[in-house]
Image (tube, rainbow, N blue to C red):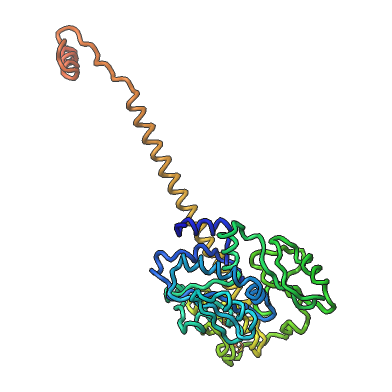
Length: 394
Ligand code: SF4
Ligand code: SF4
């Protein structure tokens, strides 16, 4: 297939990043304007967070299909090298992927099991020693990264004609039989929990995602979406205890652990003060919300919540700006249309108006131009008037 037809088919099948970001994959497969050819195509087989095993399972059980998906990616992106990064505590997945990749030239590379090595930027650094610039794209350094589950759905979409209708979800924590389930999108969390034998005692919170980056759910009536990589029924042991928040002491512990080389305490100050421009100057959008800074903060400051708040505010302001600009453009277009219509109407009226006939002139002025004829007609009257006036005065 021609690359653009293939990208359209992938877009229509709803293929997105299944690592959790759910960014449309077809967009990442279009290099035009970014670089001619990729240096490295990276397949991310490192789990996003502790407790998750969905990527491990799919690599162990569906390695051939993942490699079929990688062929499609390689066809579209023409990389010089294909690297598959898998954490070194997953020997079965490594063995399965190595067997499936035999003879393809794709390299399976174990990486240290250290959170958050599953982050795209962190895995890129581990595998290639390259780092995308702040505010830059990974393609700026010749790298593009896809999750292994995304490669699997790519194979299903292109080779089997099946759009993304399901995904593997890790159901874990305080449930009777923790397991991975290939769940149809839309399935209620409650049904997956029931499939796992129901809740055990001591569940404090239901989390979509992992303990570090996940979102608390207020109900298990929520449906599985493409972003649902894990459902964690968390007890006290899985949660960071909620301790009283104290002032920042500028101890710098958060800086030491930040995998994105940011200054978390500066981001915190500016987000808290609603100085969103300054927060962006400190590369707020390079924060991957891994939660490491909050985890180590001795003052128990929920730092990531401040970053999420700041990002949401900035997005809302951007949307508002776009709305205002759109309204301005529409108003201007309307005014131009009204003016155009008015001018068209006037032109039509001018065309329709009949030419006025010249008044017929008879008598001695016949044949003279109208103004001269009028002067000639008026002259005898004014001469008579002068004569009459002279008689009265004299
Ligand atoms: S770890 Fe907490 S207290 Fe220390 S500098 Fe960072 S935000 Fe401040
Ligand atoms: S959450 Fe904290 S540690 Fe993680 S990337 Fe953002 S600022 Fe850095």
